[in-house]
Length: 139
Ligand SMILES: [Zn+2]
Image 1 (cartoon, rainbow, N blue to C red):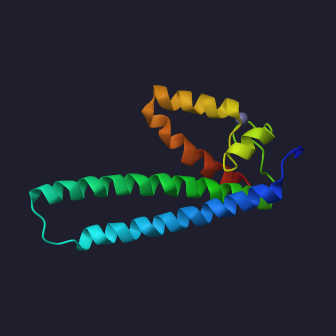
Image 2: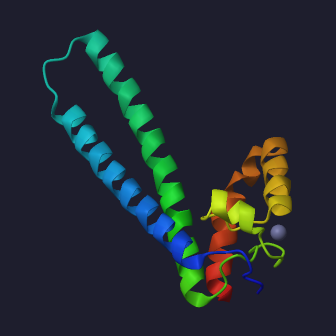
Image 3: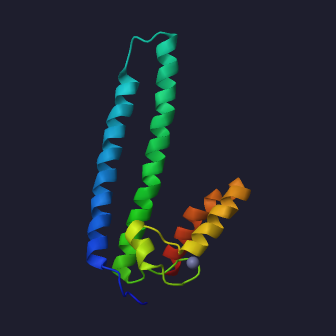
């Protein structure tokens, strides 16, 4: 792989930092969820608010977990030397793209193709985790 222009050390630092941020964020959300659970004395309006905030909590949590999985995957690819290579087509991911999105596992072209696919058929949304599982099995 051609690593020209990619500062692995700096990217590792970035990824680790991001990882800590997400873990901290998830911990806070967890605390928040527990508070919601233990909150007593609700009238109907409160309950509505409660279920809404639970929903948004869940959404935020799963978003962060997705990013965390991607960050972990990127860190793993750094340690096994496959970082910077698109896991879909095997091409190099541009250094500029890695700077902006160090946890990405796709080159711009594959990312765009994937997003297009997800846009046209929502069931393809499961492609992302599947693709990363497949990479794990292959490496
Ligand atoms: Zn690609």
